[in-house]
Length: 224
Ligand SMILES: *[C@@H]1O[C@H](CO)[C@@H](O)[C@H](O)[C@H]1NC(C)=O
Image (tube, rainbow, N blue to C red; front, side, top):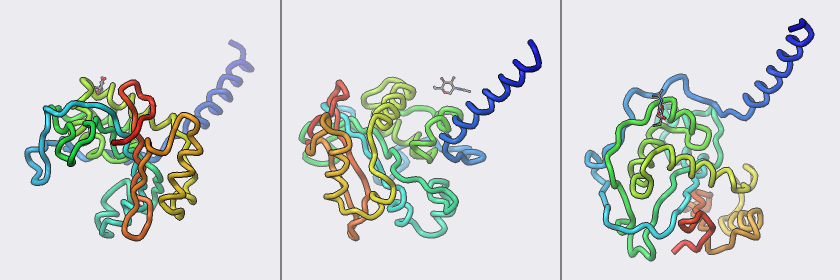
C-alpha cells in the first residue's frame, strides 16, 4: 500500500469515527455492580402472569420533569439527571398490555425472574434508556411477559423509538400537553392518529410522559 492510500484511509477512518462519535450519548465510566431486579423484594410490586397481551405501549419519559421531581442529592447520584447531562425524551419502557384493563394490576407484569444483563448489553441501550436499573427492571417487569430474550425486547424497543419523529426539546419543555399531542400526531401522520397517543403532564402542566400504542404487528393502534 502506498503512503497516499494509507493517509486516505486514515482520513476516512477519522471522519467516519467522528460522525459516529457525535451520535453517541454520554456513558457513565462504570455501572454499579448490582442492578438485578427482583419484584419480590419490592413492597409495591406484583406479578400477573395470567393476563393476555393484546397490544403494546411504548412509554417515553420527559427526563427534565422526572429529574426535577427528585431531591438534589438523588439527582446528583443519578447519571440520567446529573447536571452535566441533558437527556430529553427517553424510553421508560415497552409494555405488553391487556385490553380494557380495569386497573394497572390487570396488565401482564413480572412474568419471569431473569439474571442481571451484562454491562455491554446495558450500555448498548444507554442512549435511549440512560439508567441500568431501568434497563434491567423494564425487561423483567414488562419484557418477560411477551418476549423470550432481552435482545428481542430491546431491539423492538429501539426500532419503535427510532422510527418516531420527535418534537424539539424546547417545545416539549414548554408546550401544553394538548399542543404536544397535536404536534406529535402531526409529525407522525398519516400513520399515527390521536387515539394511539396519550400525553401525561404533572400538576404544573409540565410534560411527564408520552405513550404510544401498537398492535401485535407493531402498527399504531388505539390505547384502551
Ligand atoms: C451480553 O449479553 C448479550 C445478550 O444476552 C449476549 O449476546 C452477549 O454475548 C453478552 N456479552 C458478554 C460480554 O457477556
